Image 1: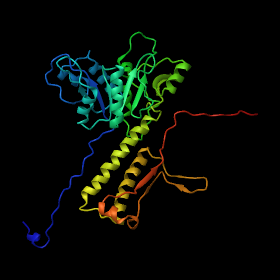
Image 2 (image 1 turned 30 degrees about the horizontal axis):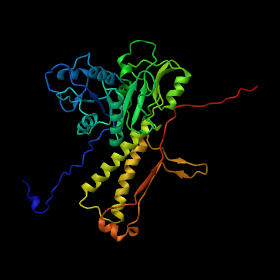
Image 3 (image 1 turned 30 degrees about the vertical axis):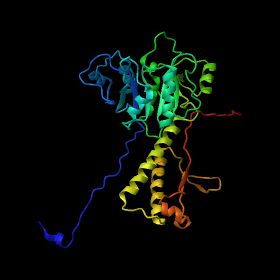
Image 4 (image 1 turned 180 degrees about the vertical axis):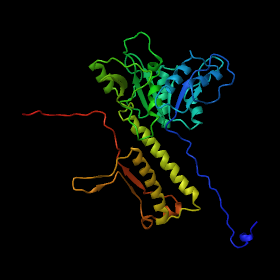
Length: 358
């Protein structure tokens, strides 16, 4: 071996960044216990890549868990993974509280949206909506008749999907689990790159809706599936509060991404000094995340106003070190960084007026 190390001694360390364990493209199904004994015991959270993967745990093709998973994997784009958790049952055959079940599932922090399979009481739907709001996860449920089973106008993380009025006495699995199909489909796109309106859902039969019913659903911020110009598509794409689902998902993703990237910046440096260079370093990380979000389509592109002045899609503002008090520096907590970003939005409807003249 060369004795160059006597003159030039080099050491290279491999620093492992903090990994982002959150995913905003994975779906969780909350299901009942399998009716049959399987070759393997159902884990806390099972990760499957096709509905048949459930058979090893004792589920068969007649089980609701199997049917819902099949609907999810029937979408295009198709999910790579679907997460499945079975609610525990006590000695009195009572299901564990839904919040406890979801807390267990949250221990595997790689899913974002969830749907209940086989649990549709108003009490369970309400509990799911409350948990989703408290934990910044997306909850979707389907109903096939009547009015909204629970009031969701106060929720930013819950959406309803009406899949009834199909003119048949028996509903296909795609309609029973329409909310599952909806999430599986739209989670196939990067956060910010998608809209949840005008999407085709495989296996879902379109609803035949009167004008009054459409207006009723829109007023209730409920999503639905119908035929427009010989094409079956979803409409609305809203959560209960009236905000767009894609905006909620993008916001949750952006918050998480900024957190993890700033943390990694602080982790990989021996010290981020409390001076202009250190502050600018953090500012640059945030700008990098926002730039990526702009390329994806969540944040609007830069534009020029009517006077040809450039309007950036986002602006990050950071204080100068000299403006920060000694007390703040002593506490070693940087405040005063902020950003404003313009959402790109999406066009769902178009109004065109024309005139023919001689």
